[in-house]
Image 1 (cartoon, rainbow, N blue to C red):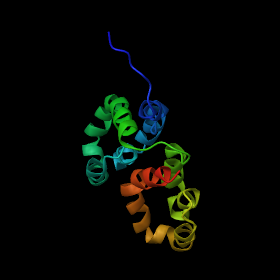
Image 2: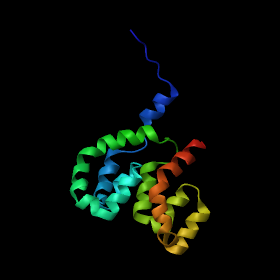
Image 3: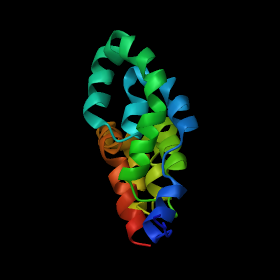
Image 4: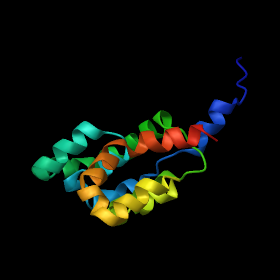
Length: 142
């Protein structure tokens, strides 16, 4: 009979970083890959972006895949004081204003985004590709 003790990594894993609800909310915009970017699947996110969710077929199939993508993201990314869901909402709906960057404490680039339309949308695209890693790094600092 094995006794399992709850270590700090187990507690962190239980906290979670990515919610299923948020995945489904972003799935509404999934034909442009939003939910795939959210779960850290950048390559398929780019494919969904350029093919409208694999011609909407992959987008529909993702309805069944979102819970598994959420579990994978919870294992991959570091939880902490910077909330993934809030940051992704800010990026998705207000990315050109840089509010998500200000929330992460990146005030200089946040103001640059605010003045340049998300650094001419290229910065917003960069953040869609790297936001999970940026948040993991920020949460590791605490």
